Length: 331
Image (cartoon, rainbow, N blue to C red; front, side):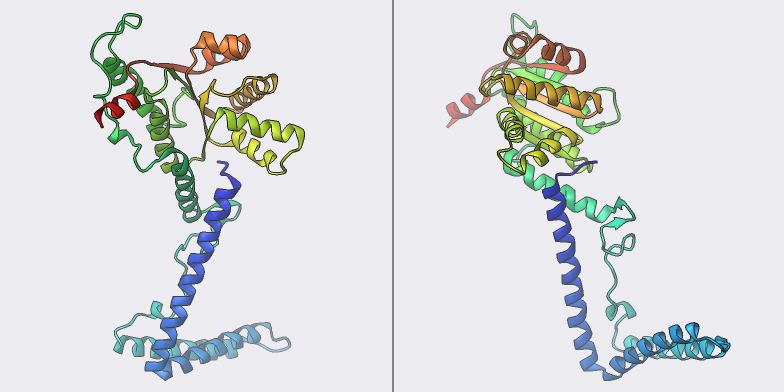
């Protein structure tokens, strides 16, 4: 998976800060224990000396190191026994004096060879959710908090079902299943469309949280911001734009919000096609939300783009009464 470099950098920084804080606390605790029992400090100095002696004896040339090694190891064991006994009388364990890594898998490095360790992976997930929360208010938006009572029960003449039935029996189950089985099913892309204020961004945020918590990299941005970054890259306006566009193309899940609200230009049309086509060919997952219908997408962007969306995206039509207006009327 491809995390945002900024997310990885912040997570790595947190891992290092945690390691330093543990080392600081261990050293503080060690100082206090040594002050209570000075013999422990002496034993630890002797243990370090015997370890150095073992290495020296093992590397010695011209004579058999076995007797020296056996003597040093015996002394080391005696010192460890005395150390454990003294710690026991103080109600402490040997680990209270040792700087033991919090993660035994990677020794707190965050990596097992070239593979990211679970400890760093968890921090990346936390940092990613934090970054998404600034944009999507993820603390409030979860599948459990979704409310169906904002959707009316009177059937829509064009759709043949009510907004409530559409949400309860079509849209919500698809979105929930998409999030829970992310990467496991054939459905890789969603196109959420309909009038403003009907829950498209809310459900996108629910999916973003659930997929992030599974450890996948998720990037959310508005269509206007995404196309602007592609424009910055094209004209060399910002050295960071290349990293941003790579992030859009390589993350596990890209959520493109509010397609159609931006100024449509040949460059925005080209950028949209690049995003859609590149992510399709690399089997990446994408969610696009828009106030435009598929026919409107074809007219505003191109029939080719609309064709890709119709063929490769599961389209979900949102309809009903604007939820934001409903909430305003309740005040």
